[in-house]
Length: 123
Image: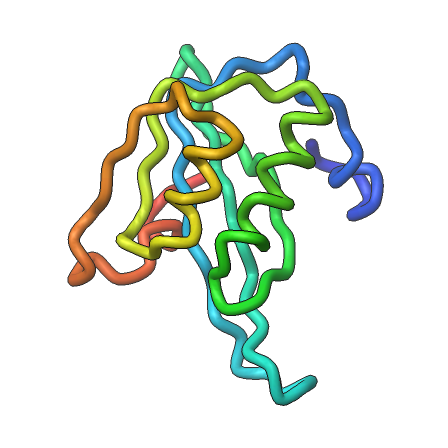
């Protein structure tokens, strides 16, 4: 994925990739562009061979179910199949969106004390 521009990265096909695990998290930005709270939705996938890769990155609104659903639907439109297991914090928006878009995916939550889990994943 190195060398892809942001637009090409966000439009690339996901049909030939199977993700066993999908880690999701949100990064809250300290930049005040608007009054509304903007965040960055992050999805990192793990393939069956153990390779980790950035699946998707998008701006969202307050970790809402609609923001997550838009991102998951976009990945599905680009050919992404349901991951076996999604791992994330207790933010309810993601789990509602996951059940709507990929209802067959198993869910696992990490404790809130873990902080931002995506920082711990070496890509």
